[in-house]
Amino acid sequence: MTRKWVLNASPTILLAKISLIGLITDLCSEAIIPSGVAQEIQAGPDKDFAKKWLVQKGNIKEVSQIESTVAAWDLGLGESHVLSWCYQNEGYEAILDDGLARKCALSLGIPMRGTLGVILLAKKEGCIDEIKPFIKELIKVGFRIDAKTIKTAMDWANES
Picture (spheres, rainbow, N blue to C red):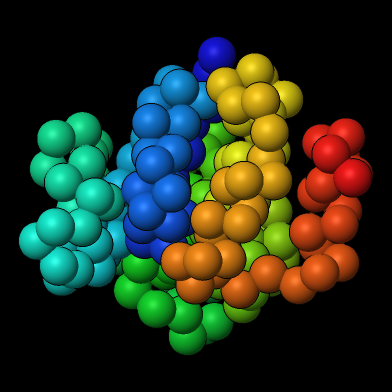
């Protein structure tokens, strides 16, 4: 397995909230948490599972400069750090959910997937048996996802 991921705060926090944070190390050979993302996660409550994971297993890398092509999109610090890292370091995939950040990644040719994409990959690789319970949990913890995307994911996972 040679997947190398650069994680944004939202997918990291969401996967932790639904007890799937272990998928990060199960599904990729290297997981980078840019410094701006680490700041966002560390600002969370002390009991936050993502914060605990970050302390125990987080591979935090300093991002000292945001790429000008990324900065032009006026994204948040975490998204800007994720995309700048991927832009500057070939072979990394951005793990992020923010719509505008995903458009930026697409425009720059940066490979990406979101929280749902990680869960679908986990199903494909046999790490989980079903995606449906985790989609329900994601919605419970505040993940916004439209019915069409849920149906597409469920169809792909043969869980319709």
